[in-house]
Image (cartoon, rainbow, N blue to C red; front, side, top):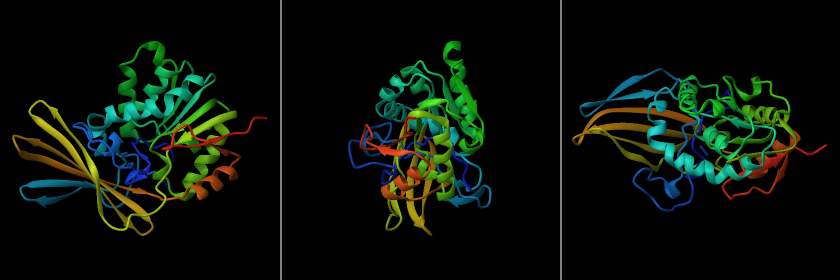
Length: 307
């Protein structure tokens, strides 16, 4: 079972962040730092398949390291380099206004490398509970917090467990889950709604990007991250997805090139669970969260009723 509170991942997971999230959206403009539609970030906040560990595959003269087990073990090296700027812009568009209205606390479910957390800190004076159970992403998050001022760090409490295990009760008037929900299997998703409902104050608001509503019809290319230059090297990633027994399998293939030659390639595979809006709405209502009008078309929203 997937532990809720995964990194961001950038998505609404279908060729969209129609992965709903962290995956991609309707076709739009592409740029040099992210050639995903509408500059939408692609999330690696999806569940790694629990298969064998790293295994090399010969591809010409370049070995491809494939990771199916440890969450973000491969992706964390490339995540901020390839996705931070688009993630930051997306987080500001999606959450900054609501964060500015928060007075008691904000819950960041699946804080990942901390891009959304930092956006929330900037937009609000409220304390923040950042939930991130994946150690590789949490290390990046703490590195990000280390570069902030002491006053901002003092407002962030990091919970190194899933949201279900965090034990948070009525601590926030806003909860956000960016590029996370698509990565949760149905049972974990339902327990996540329950935990979020408990963590919200009466009248508190939940904002999240939805999972894909349906499976792709076959294997398809989702997009590309990069290119980004670091010294003499060019970093990038190719993303594909395909149906796999009722779930969506997302494959991120990262590559580093120098002088036109591939130095290394690494691949990480993740799983996403489709769910339609009516199903999500029923699950939310079952946990005492009322579906409300979202502030943006790429988000869903629910509110804990006021007493």
